[in-house]
Length: 478
RNA sequence: GCUCGUGUGGUGUAGUUCGGUCCAUCAUGUCGCCCUCUCGAGGCGACGACCCGGGUUCAAAUCCCGGCACGAGCACCA
Image (cartoon, rainbow, N blue to C red; front, top):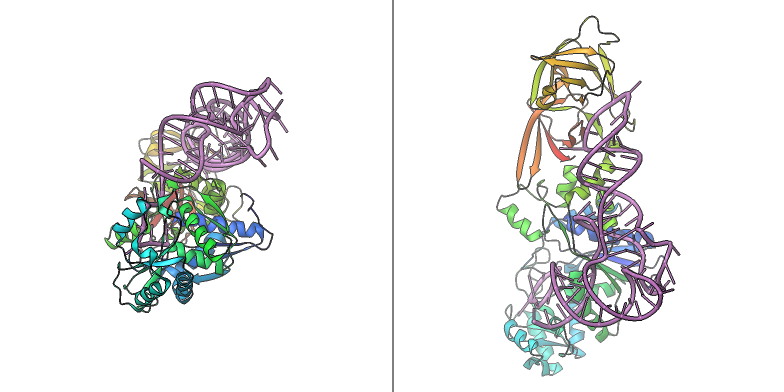
């Protein structure tokens, strides 16, 4: 992490400001991780602010507020120091808007969006710009009172019209929305846009450093102009670039919301979705997500990263705590033969739950002549070592023990005596599909929700364990 | 088109502020080897990069100029 410019240890305030139009995505988690980490390093605090001032295009999802708050804590390992809802702060924003108009650096514009755009592009003043303050205040009262329909007026911040960047010229600060807000209802007819709301609130919360995506660079420029009007000094601002996770593409909350409502996905935690709830449910650790973003750091480069990169982080965090189990895919039945003459044979073996002993305990297997199962590709090898037990030679459906001790460099395969197996199905998300692999799992000390490493297969999470029938497991990664 | 930003191995990243200590860091990936005993685990090793062209300099990934490529913003969304 870079050092924060102009920062004093213990006097740093950062913020994370999502739109609660759905729960957090992997994309959002970058903001959570970076901001909370910087707060941690600098002895500062983090404001969690819900930017919910759009009731129409991306309306808030009431359940998302508490979910995001909880997810913030899960990801960062700490609670946000302050939680704010922009929709609760409307009186303040309206007050500053009125102040802006009264002092003459804001005005009510009654032009249509199209008309304003064409004037702006040719650096021309719109007719409303010259209106007197008294008239602006009158129009403002009408906006607030609800007598102007949506689209009929907007409050703009005065800037130089010669600004080289057309996006900044007399930018809009508040607009009319008559659509009720899910939390505060129809009380307000005028709502601030992000650039205004965020600028005011950052000031009020004493935000010292803003760290956000570089798609918001123009936002910084607009807000800096506004701060200039108010005589305030803008916070230090740092940016990160665009990230695309190859397997998912972008992280559009509204896009996912639509597809969930269409039934394409089962919910926000559908394993095919790049949401925090989905990743968490699948078995990703918050530490892996933190490590991932911290390693990418704060560069402004636009990057594409494979999911494998997050999976590698997850492997190293969960490997030491994941118990091992055998899972035989598409099992082939064989008869195990243990000739009398075999030396050192003992009828039971004890396999550690974790080879490094980082998890205590063992799985106790009783082994006698009888039926066992193995995977097809291992059976085909014919000469193989049954992991944890003995070297065998396979012929005509029989696995004949030739030595308990290792005799050569043959492949070591996982296997199971049928007595300790139970039917299981491994669900693997593959793009938009879910592939189901059936097999049998080592039925020892299994619990719903535990993440195990299936020997020679990879990590999976145990789902439902029904009283009868197959156990459902969901694939995590290799 | 205009505006802004970014260009280091396959993918990310360090180094660029104050040019030499950089025949360029680390992770991941790929390949190989090891493992009296799992693997897609772990250990060890190998592979692989400074966008291009000029310039300044004894010396440039680092400074200057010019290209090129990629991305974002140009919403009465956030």
